[in-house]
Each structure stands twice: as C-alpha cells, then as structure tokens.
Length: 169
Image (tube, rainbow, N blue to C red):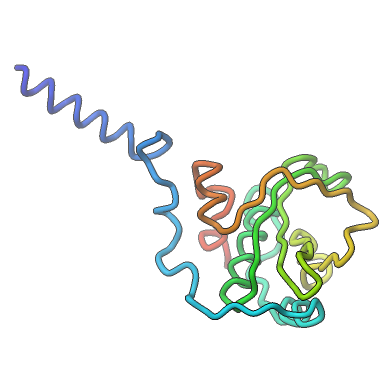
C-alpha cells in the first residue's frame, strides 16, 4: 500500500512540474538551433535600415497572436541571425496602441549606439521603423531589457508571448 501511495505521489509531482513551476524550464520550448552562430558586426544605422527593409514579414499584426511581443522576438531573432547585436525591450509606451506598460520593441547596436526599432508598425509601413533619436509621437520607458529570447522566456515563465514561430503563416 505504501509503495502505491509513493508511486502516485511521484506521478502527481511529475504532472504538476511539467509546466509553470520552478522545476519547469520554459526555454526548452524555444526551437533547437534558434540562433545561428554567426560573426557579429556593428552596422551603421543606414545599413540596419536596409537590412530591416529587406526583412520578410511573416504575418500581419494581430493583437494577442502576432503582436508587439511576437514581432519583437521575430525581429530580434532576424537581426541576431544576420550578425547584428539586438535585444528585446518591454516597458512603457504611451500613447501607443493603448498598451501602456506592456509594450515590446527591439534595440539594435549600431555605430551610433543602441537604436530603437518599433516592431508594431511593420504592417502599417511595410517594414519596421528605426528610431535613431527616440520618437516624437510616443514616449518609451524601458522596464525590462532582455539580451535574448531565453531571458524573456525565463522572465515571463512561458513562451506564450514570444513564440512567433508557432503563429506565422
């Protein structure tokens, strides 16, 4: 009888720890080989703009499906796999699409330093918008800076906000 109870407890603890607890590592859900091992380079902002202009856009903006978080993860992945240092930023952006402090964007390192890339404007202008000196229309205040997808996924405890590879068409 004691063995049956012990086996049941181990089974329940295994099911409980599959997702959402301290024993579960959500970064395991990021596809294997997510980043290529490429040599990084520091582009001029115009080279960055050219790279982003030629970037394929896999899907249209759709809130809760392929919105600022998935788009930011996609752009960060694209830049990193083209050798450009990039990071995902989450923070305050007002008055931007009523997202307040839950907005995501990307920063890329150029010869001018870190520049902002607004990813939610992809579907509006056919590409992303590079803010060299900040934005005139939107106030941005970073709250979290993630150096890669793994930092973002670990912080949020899930891939749900970042899994662009599951939603692109």
